[in-house]
Amino acid sequence: MINLSVVVPVYNEEDRIIELYRSITAAVKDKAESYEIVMVDDGSRDRSAAILDELAAGDKAVKVIHFERHCGETAAVSAGLKQSGGELIVLMDGGLQGEPRDIVRLMPFINKVDFVNGRRTEAKASQLTRIPARLGNRLRNWLTGEQIRDSESPLKLMTREVADSFHLYNGMHRYLPTLARMNGFSVIEVSVTYRKRKRSRFKRPPGKQLVTGLLDVVVICMLKRRVVRYRIRSSPNLR
Image (cartoon, rainbow, N blue to C red; front, side, top):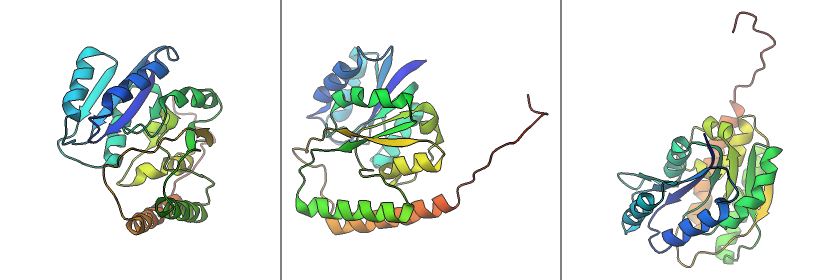
């Protein structure tokens, strides 16, 4: 069985894919007994698909998944987790906002907990971007009862059991720490590096971002209230 899977959603990242691949490889090749890099092409319209295929042809550690059309980050995350084979799974972004070298920073904690959430410490986004994000984060924690400071951080590490427990719907890739806790797993946050993108794939209005986030939180809260929890005292007839 593969020891470590690095899952990366990719959408129109032709300028970064080679750097991304080299950075991930350098970060994990001497740190894991065996590893794979699972790159999910989310219907890219540039040369991303061709570049990914070239990488896969030259390195058996690279596994590529191509969507027929653009389906969104949650779909790419879900497909990558399901198709990965590692005992441990790292999730990171395709735009190199997360620093692959920080994977090593997260690894020691997975021996103590089930899910390690990277908390960005060097983000330098504009006030227009940060204010909705902070408001959304505080509102999310207030409604869900969580204390996650950076649920949308692109760098995360989890066990196979956590990954297999997820049943994701659109937008839920932003709430993986909360979903992990809802499923009975332990979660901590660890500070990681954050690099601002040189350009953005799209610009979503901050107001729309906040409203969308609020609606997603409502769904999460409803699910949290309906989580089925039980413990089996004994079952003598089961083998």
